[in-house]
Length: 341
Length: 288
Image: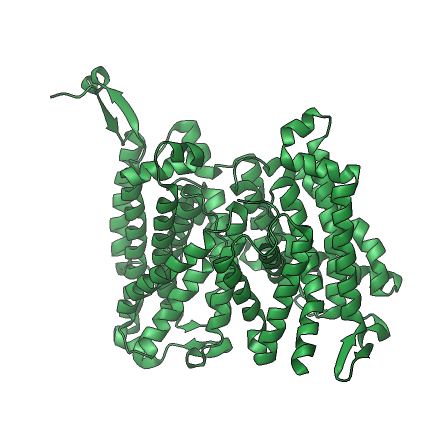
């Protein structure tokens, strides 16, 4: 039985892109063998930002849930890690997935409330939730209350005896999380749910009339993103060894940067946050001394991109040259066409 | 009697929140835009007032007549040059552009005025109060703020339902394309709405700055208070925002009375509770 048509995901650019990613991944896994300590720290930070931005991209760029309160889950993840290790004596790396599970459980009722707010108001509603989390965290005195708490030395050394091995462990954990996030996103986008999600991104009304259960898809995405974001948050604060309500629920660090990264790189595309994060870190290296002016400049660039090239850097390249890094597009090939290929 | 005092304080501060909310509700009503920079613009108004007081030696309350036109001008220009380009079916551009604007204003103020806490001093009125009954005292300044809020909201209500100006706003809100066919210039109407919103913000910003310390970072919390008052009161109703502001103010006052650390949290919880049991708000005008 030969079918009249089939769906093709890949293209020449995605073949090159996937191969390049595979080689880069091998190099990154081996990096502790040759990279210096500062480089490893910087790279783990880059991984966590790509992962955070990818998740925000999934939420806002695909599911149309523009949240400015994802710092709620970054901070929650961090606090769960500190609580689980300090109060319950858990192994720090085991506490990372636990943070994800707890965040997902909390995200369900939160979504139930927030989804009552239409479009724009949803954004500010998520910010309220993040503020509630921050204020509650500063009331928990066993975790340092408003001034925060450090991870005790015994817990730090329980991860690995030598400092070097601990740094390697955190680096690999960050890399693993990033690969899992990007891999899960790629699989999701290739699945039929991904098709539903892309339909919602392009036109919610049309998606609904084509039979997509928009509400359920959005709920599932919101919870999955909370899960991933909290795991990344847990890892971030495991690396920092100290947490406080202000740093854990910082809107600048975990939302403003993430939004700017995604917008500049290209919202609604899996490649966007990767490009955006690289641009962000390059700019930061050059302009870090400017302090608050750097943030101001970033805001201005993001506004300019939104107005002039709303699909961001990668959207521009993809539109111009038809590039894609991963085999995610859907191209209909008909019988004759398929034979010649 | 202590509780009576607490509730009165809450009601009076609620007037200020209602003014934050009125500006937000106004532009959402006219053009379905939620301005994330709203709170930072309130803080900007406070700094404009501070500069005017320093430069001209005026009493902060009188600077409103200077600050309001300046803010209105900023609002008109902002809408005309920037925000009008973001309006459309897509939610993302207006949200992200106003979010960017919020970050720009915050960090711009930080560069210009440092992170130091500032305050406007309005003289004797700040501490003046009069007794009501035996144990209840009412501060003159909070009362002035509350009366100002009622006047602003009443004024907006009249403007919306009794004037040609308001007709243009409502027409554009109901159906922008038909309004345009009837000869309205939507771009101009939107810019006027933003100008009006920022004039309201100017009054709120000056009153806020006399009442409490401010610094460049407090904007987002003001946005959130205004937003909570809008949702508690119910979308589409100006007097609803006043009720929402009062509910929020009273919740915060009760929280603060129980434990100073619970003030803001109690307001958030009241908002979440309303959202859970009555998502359309207390006095909704538009259904669905």
